[in-house]
Length: 286
Image 1 (spheres, one colour):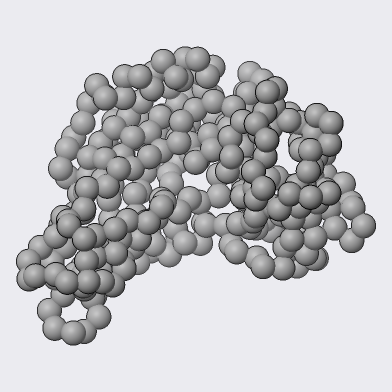
Image 2 (cartoon, rainbow, N blue to C red):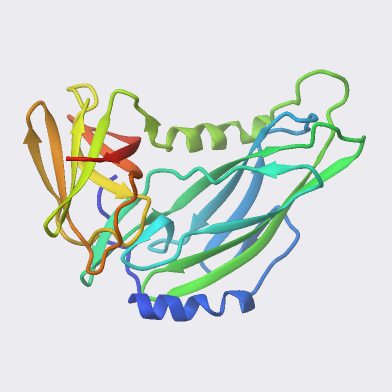
């Protein structure tokens, strides 16, 4: 969870220019795995067979070359989030991606929220409640931006084919995927109902007032808003006591939009040497 000194990136204008060539990036298509020059990506199923109407988990596992990185759902001051467009059999549905807690890095006056080394993005696929016997392909077109001293758009189509489970028994988990999915779930921010947060604009600051972070959960050290463009991500945050709780004060971005009535994000807290990440929703109000 520490800030990385290796992450580097281009100014936003250059990132947007690179994004325009995503459609022409090289593709290794129709395989369980694919790779660009600096990022490999693989689609993995948690199960070896599926059942009608029963959801199952899949993972997009990305491995980056040393010092290269990809981005969170809110990339920060520049960058682009990794995206997937699913192609599924009739009647199948896919959930939104579930994102691990990002890290924050600052360079050249800009900040990014992202990942280095590797990241696993989870999704849930729900089959049709009525399925004939056969095999079913789940395919995802994944696009991302990989950055080091330069930024390069990446694109790949990856797929897996799963059979219908025989009989009424539960679909079998794939033991080869057990460790990957366990690690991916452990990296997700936890839901902590005891934490209550309000957000308010005070001058040029966006202020979070946090209650429910006791000694067990720790003190706040970072907040990653899901909504982009609200804050100057590279500017220092001010963390202070507020009664029995805490306040995080962040510099608002120039021409920042109004914060939504409910501001979702990830709150990182520290208790001793242990850091935990919490999936939180801040409601508007002083």
